[in-house]
Each structure stands twice: as C-alpha cells, then as structure tokens.
Image (cartoon, rainbow, N blue to C red; front, side, top):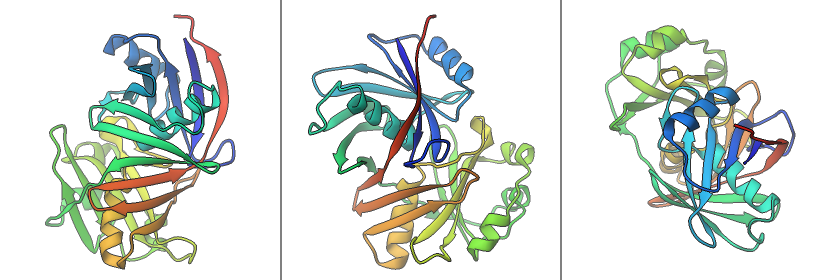
Length: 266
C-alpha cells in the first residue's frame, strides 16, 4: 500500500493544507483507517480504492473520527491519481463518498472538483460560541447536520478575523461541530477571507478547508451577486480556493504538491 502526504490548495510545498492519501487495493476496517489517520496526525487522511475504470470509493478520517466531506483531501486524492498515472489526465475521476458522488477534473495545472452547495440558515447569535471565539459577529448562520451543527459567522473586517484567538477547550464544548469565520477581503485579489475551527473533531484550526467553501461560495455569491469567487483562507499556512457556484453545486479549484510517498508496511 502506498501512502502519500500532499499539500493541497497551493503550488508550494509546506503551504496550503497537508492531507494523507492512502491507496488501497480493497476496503479496510474503520478501526484500521482511524489508526492510520492518528499515525499521520494530519487534519484529514483519505482512503480510496478502485470501484471501476474511473471511479474510486473515498473516505476521510481525522485523528479523532470519520468525516462526511473533505475538500482538501479530495483534491489531494485526485492529484495522486493523476500523478501516479492511475488515470490519464484527460479523464474525469468520480469519488463515491458518504456525501454522494464527487467528480474531479484537470483544468490546466489546477484541479477542479464538483461538490454539493450548502447554504446556512440565519440563526440567533450564540453567546457561548461567541465567548469561546472572543468575537461579536455581524451575522450568524447555522447548517444542521446529524453529527453536529456547522456555524458560519461573518465578522466586520479582515483585521478582526485575523486577530481572533479562540479558547479551543471552550469551543469544543459548544453545540458547534465546526465553525467558519469569514469577512470581506481587504485585498482586491480575493472576494472573501475565512478561517475554520473544529476542535470537536480533533482540528483546532484547519489550514485550508475546501468543504467550507461549499457554504462560503453560496453565502458570498448571494451577497456580492457573483457566481465566480476567489477565497483566501487566512491560516498560518494560507491557501487560495477558486469557487464557481452553479446553483446546487460548487466547483472548487486549486493546485497540489506531493511532499512524500511511502510504503505502508502494516
């Protein structure tokens, strides 16, 4: 079995969001995949095995649990498939996941992925959540999900967003499974900026979160009256996500760099 570490949503090593990618010949038990994800100790490790000529079964694990959707590890998986010449670069790849079928294709030197668009609903400000983030948002949105709710909070400026220093222990005890913080960008190259926190699933702050842009693209698309947007994730590693919102789908675009390839011996 081959195991890769790929930096996603960047064209530079040691930037973007690192993901593990494990190529399997057959399904493995959940407990084994979780053990590998803990060993990798990255925000997500992807496990995939072929399900046809151009299709793969794909699952994602944090060091703490399985997640139902992950953008950067999907980008990393597609990158590995084409880099390892498992498919010609002209072929689209389909991933069968717990969030439905996701497709990816080459777009020049980048990769585009089709994800479900998800829209948050306006919600009352959650004071417990705001205290843990040490912020006062100008908008609170919530997306209800079976394993826990996702919150999207807009703050008044990029400077405010960058200054936020959460209390992660307190944040993990709130009703939020994950929180997206966002604001308009102060840089004309980008439409919006964001940060992503999910200590409840073992990720304090994620470097670049593709799945968050499934919510961000419709949110900012409606506010700005745009279908094509560029998002900048203002984490320590930073990353850029190109978004194309098409009603019930969001196409996410980005680049990736392989950092290492190894043989998994156990």
